[in-house]
Image 1 (spheres, one colour):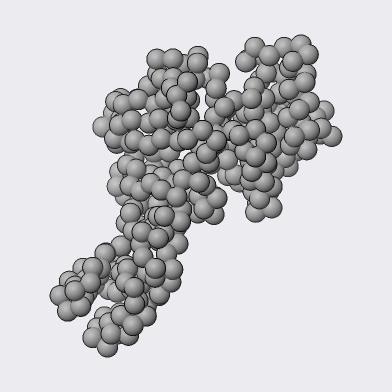
Image 2 (image 1 turned 60 degrees about the vertical axis):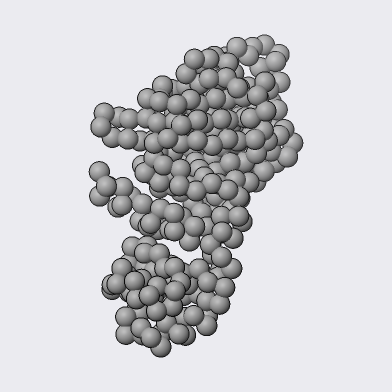
Length: 316
């Protein structure tokens, strides 16, 4: 068995002339919580489809514990649990009936199936609702039932594609507490696709996926530290022109990010005072702060995460 839970090598996929993934490579260690951060339409779901054997990539390979997701589908599926953007449950069936049906698909039966169902019901606080139809459950309880479904066959790797979509903050927090307990007690490897910065912050390693390309990879802290101790952000009507003037006069690198300039500098407050003195009429607003994961995304992708839908629509 491979020492890597997931190994993606030069993965590329095209839908006609549209490139959904472009030369993506990364690895996930066993037991890790790996986050793929990016806007909807950035390539996360396509990558998950390739990993879960639902899509054969145009180029490259996706491996799960050493097994090729295209050539060894049965081996991959045995080791895989998937939580989709919407719960994969039959609304008209009870929670227990849904779990029984899913377990049968994986060859579980009899006493073994009953014990696994009872274990996941207890583990996610669903025992009292086992006989309730799924359609009568709240969104948070449906998510927990879906997580129980994905874990019924005790997969070594859990793929979670935007798992908290539609949940309120309380339900989202409870869902993540369930994941934390699961990692602690069972050591399950998790790969989470999300567009929520707070979820990415909770991951061991984060890969930023923008328009099908992996543009940054590292721990959240390392990605933030790479931007410097403090980051200066300037709003200006002429970012390219101001960038050139700042670099010419002060010799510091300034990056254009939409209508903003981003400058990493060890003496950011002092630099800001000098910039206002030299170019005050060209600066609409300025902020000095320690880098956040949102700053990391902006620096590497060139737009804010909440602007992703508009940017990707325009790019098409």
